[in-house]
Length: 353
Image 1 (spheres, rainbow, N blue to C red):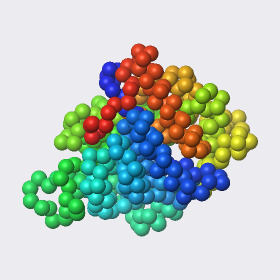
Image 2 (image 1 turned 45 degrees about the vertical axis):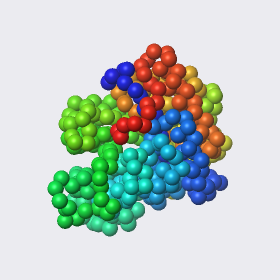
Image 3 (image 1 turned 90 degrees about the vertical axis):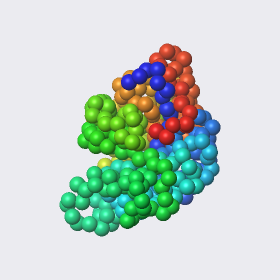
Image 4 (image 1 turned 30 degrees about the horizontal axis):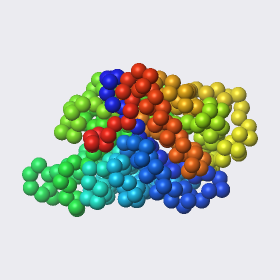
């Protein structure tokens, strides 16, 4: 890791849906949130893919990307990610080639292999009983990259419409060292889900950097790492706002169809000692706290992960509180740079990485 390199600040949004708040309202608030994030100097805004999970409003990333790109002008907008085994690569390529026409130089395609839902939903999406289907991910990814690259010779037998004039950036997402190896072998930028598997981050990032092979798409390894980020005026307030996502980590294992509780409801949830130990281990590596705690955890996050970019996942209740988290995080980044822990200010969006 180069401590003097610019450190980018971005958003990974799952569009959390809380008790008493219609999913439609949560989605419409994106049109207010993304421009605020842009004004704060963030680099990119990604949308996840989930299905049959009422607590998450991100079932159609390409649709949401088009909406957010239309209300912003400098943010890169993309998927974090499209779960490729759920889709035909050719259709995904057509969707993102079309988005690139309307928003040139601002569209990212992050792809992953997880189902984005429980097994019954995965079967409904994939329409296959073939156990070898999952093993075809590498082939699907190569096919997708081929569609989104300008043809080397004449028109190929199967080409996307509109034609691709310059490569649409393709990222590989993952939660394990095996995904890091695949991204490295293909010479793709890599995004690791630290907010889901914090214990695996350092190994995956190290393997990606060690095994990286330069490609036509990327000369040097580039890593974005996601983290749960909740920043408030005090540590106590941040912990209160973190209540819903902490309870969701416990409750979601039993009932994946539940919505996020409000902070008040989460504060009344009966967490056992075992729950508390699990949550402490999972959230200690995340960025939750008041401004000073956030600065300290942010510096530690970058030191341990070696990330070029932070993808902040902020499942905070209420639009105003979400905006405040992103503003305080941006301020923490600037203050960390001033404190001498490296150049952590959000970089400009000039690069396609």
